[in-house]
Length: 84
Image (spheres, rainbow, N blue to C red):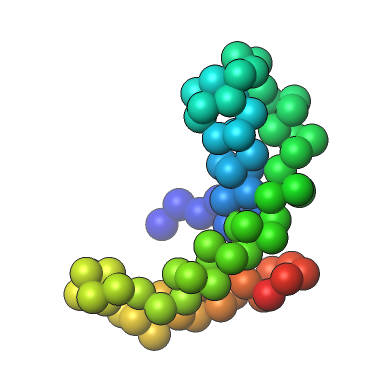
């Protein structure tokens, strides 16, 4: 299975930053890469909040896989940095 070398919480924070900054996400910067690189740490609290919300899968998610594994994976992501 392919895996990312970038922690999940950082990837979420980068998406949130990109949505605020990039024209692709509703912002006004058509060349936002450097701005997103600078801004994503400002979105870590929101990224952790999202991961906390995902700790418990909904019924559809639970029906698709192993709930215990899901909880362990989200727990590992939450334990990867401050704010867990």
